[in-house]
Structure formats: structure tokens, C-alpha cells
Image (cartoon, rainbow, N blue to C red; front, top):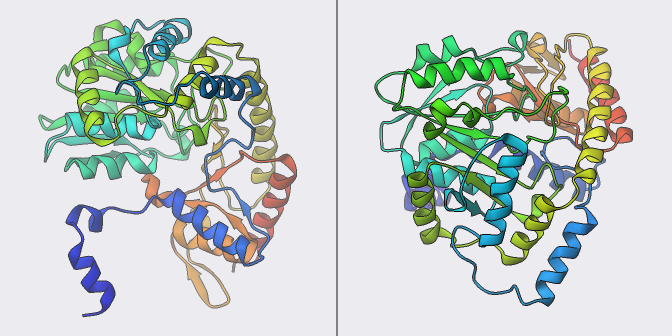
Length: 405
């Protein structure tokens, strides 16, 4: 037995069986190559390249000077939860009282709180695929059984209400999905969500976790629709949101839920044993973000839309790469399966993982394999970087794919 094997035997089964986050893994590889002197264009992480707006940073500085440096209430400062409640009403026409809101150290912790509070071993968790990589890992940590509902680029990576209903069984406990979606940028319309609400009404023991972290980054021209707006199913819906994408606050680690009271109380209890209340300074910054002018957010979204249109045109020019036009977020999820079976320097590429590693080594462009998102044909590309880098990255991708034979 090797030292590595011996070490693995000492770790818990849950950590041995847990997959490393594919996005974090690729970003780590990119950083290592950059440190070695390679000119890497990193399109792996979902992180706005814009700075946090100044008024938010100023609010954090004021909070420090005013002594907001002590432990915080587990579910968040009352003032922040009041601001979140007002935001839900203003933007989503949702009535969540402050005691139905729990603030956490990022939307990822919010999701984990909900899943660990609801899922028992053997409960089925439905995942419309493609889905964000951590949904499955968190559900499996709770010993739930993940059931994928597949979609393709031809349906804009959206599942139908009929597909959803077909997969519901007596063991189904939770559905997790995002709109706008990570990794595809797909946005479910009001009509599509209304049909899904009809399915849920017929299945009152099934709950839905709606990840709306990309709410503001929406190019449809229509107001964002929250599933919880359909009042007949509101008690089955947990709405997750946060500050990282819409306010360029990834490092502040601030997310939240609006949920039925009994679920909110469970998440409060869960969080109290893990992290307690999240950072006091980040919370005061978040309060400022929600109660001030959203002009910086809308300006950022305008730039994302320009980049989306640019990259869409450039990707369409690459032979064999199939691409659709995302309606939100800042990702493309191109189908690269036409290159499976092709080779370069004696190595055959058969999977999206093979493709992404090839692009990293030969094009110096970091993209993420779709396999960790529940898709075996695609790779994820983030366009949350400058137009100059995006143009160069797409040129490198085109040249790299042209080398495959």
C-alpha cells in the first residue's frame, strides 16, 4: 500500500467520494501554469471582472469605523434581512418576512443549508441538466440520490414540465435548478415556469430550490420571473440569491434564502452549528447594495451583453462547434462533440474533459468540461473578461480545433 492509499483510508467515505469542484480545479491549473510563465486566458471561473461598486466599498469602510466587528445574528443582521425582504417585494413581487430570510456565507452555503435540512438518505433530488457542479456534490453529501433530467443545445438546455413530471416518484423530495442558468445561460420564461408550477401543484410533497444568483444578468428584455411568484406553490419553493454576480462581490461571500418559515428556521439551526452568522462587514456592504441605486449593476450587464454578442459571433465561426445564444448569466456552453474521436500528436480526444485539457495545453485557454455539469458533449466558457482577451481566446480556440484530425 502506498502512502497516498494509506492516507485515503484514514479519510471519511464522504470526502473520498466527493468530487473536487471542476471549476475550481481548472482555475487552479490555470494559476499554476500562469505561475510557470504561460500566457493563459482563464475562461473557467464565473467571476465578474468588474470591481465592486465604490458605494458598496464605502459602506464597508463606514461599518468598520462604526464598530461592526462583533459576532452577528446567525440568520443575519435585521437591517439586512429587512433590505432583502424589500428587494424580494420590489424585484420579484414576493412577500418574505424577515424571519423567512437567512443570510449565509455565499449562496453556496445557502444551498447546502437547504439540502442538508431537507434531504434524508435515499431521497431523490431531481437535477435538470446541465446544472451547476455543486448541486450534485451537496445532494450526495446529504446521502440523497441525484436524478438527472437531460436537455440539449437544441432545446436551449431547458427541460419541459412534462419531462419533470415524468421523473417524479414517491421518493422525490427536491428539485434544484437555476434561471438564468449556470452553466448554459438559459432563462426559463414565465410560461415555462407556470407549466412547472402546475406540476408542483399536483405534487405537493416535492420542494424546489430555485437558484436566482444571476437574476440581474438577464438579456431577455423581460422582468425576471421567480417560481415562488406562483402563489399556489409558494410553500414548496426556496428562493436562493446573493451578491456575487449582480454586484461583483464574489470575495465578500454573501448569499441568502427566502423560504417557508419552517425551512428558514431549519437553515438557521444548521448554520448555527457550522459557521454562525456571516461576516459583519460584508453584511453592511450588502445592505448598501440593495438599498442604493442599481445603475452600476445595469451598466455591468450592458457590458456583459456586448461581450455575449461578440463571443457568439466568434464561436459560430469555428467549424464543428455548435453554439446557441444564451439569454442570461455570462457563459456559453458549446457542443464540441463533433471533435470526439479526433487526434493531435497521437492523442485521441473522446470526452469534454479531453477537449478542455487539450485547449489548456495547446491553446492556453482554460475552459471547463461539461461532464461535471451533467453533460457529455459540451464545455463551459465564461465571458466575464475583457473584449480583448475574449477575441484572443476565440482565435486560439479556432486555431486549436483546426489542428485536430
